[in-house]
Length: 516
Image (cartoon, rainbow, N blue to C red; front, top):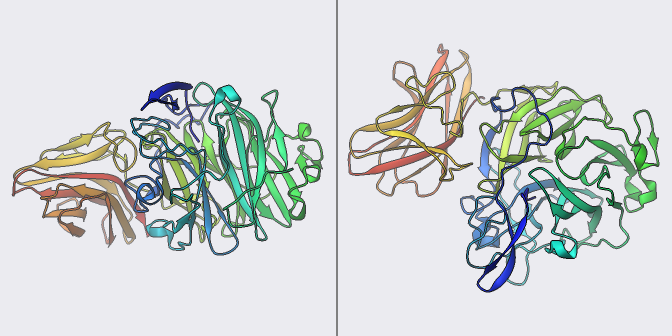
């Protein structure tokens, strides 16, 4: 999904193409008071798409920049992921549709597939729906012409019922101010060949002539023989509503019933809000570990989580899962269907650099977030450097700091250390609980002449507890260090390098320290 200020036209190589204007992700409506400075309990697991992704979606399928990553189980051992507006070679960023010379290869949506069941180290994509050229192709072609009535077709929900795949999408008529857009309609499509071909002939459609329809962006969940359809209006300023339909009647629009606050009724106009605005980019699932319904969505500028014992609520108070202070321009929050045992995996998009990340957060049996990431400013977006490296801030040893505006592993910023003599590192003192096992992770890349780098944890007196050694790391690489706190109540996490062989540098991003 692109969230643009508007569209303009620009000639590239003699061809007029639509170019999305760069804009910040919007704040539609109010968010919790702590939203702009809240700590992020979730951790980055892996960048899923783009040139720096281990999946190499750019090299394999010409998916250089994209967003969303709506996931569902296809019922045959695969997870299908639907992405929004997708760009190829000409994309230069930041944001969707920021293009340079070359082939934009703008697709309104693409579909990738995964069989990866080990999500703790990332999510591998094994295949995509491709054209004859081997590049990921649109599965639901968009008109790409606002003057003709449609800018793009964006997927918002997917699910399987039997061997059939269902996808909900919105036809975007106009991108307005950040966080505001107008849709023509929302509609279901279905596929009987695992997403290769899709039909929209006679499928349920929610038209939006007055721009007030409540089901323009949808989320799906199955339970007790029903498909539940959660909806929000176009844009980011609306409330959430819910409908249901028997699984055998998904393609019959007259079979849909809407919750009016006390009962299920046939009239969509009687639908009552189950969660108050602002709700956007909604994802819902029934979670067997907690025995609750979980709802994840963008509220204001943060991704939040609510839970409920019933699909109709009442829904709990919001818990912030990812703060925009740590991941600016975030949106989405689509839960992985194979999340289990309290470990909740989900996709998060960032406008800059307009790609998708796999994230993780841990829940208790009551649905509360536990074992959060203990590192402050984990992505260096707050640029919180201090002389002490305490209170959620980072400190330097030697020549080091924060690179800004260069695209780190996530977002714009990352830490660096660089010099030609001696030890250089970035470090932070973090409070821990005695007698507890912990896992430290982070992403590193280096100059080609780096030959003596370390990523790890030491005690507050400087003695190493556990560390990983690295030499030259050409691309962003994830390092993991496990350790026990012993009697300690504070440790120092760090990444550093000995620079005794000429000009050597390292870059670091997206630290996470969580209880095992």
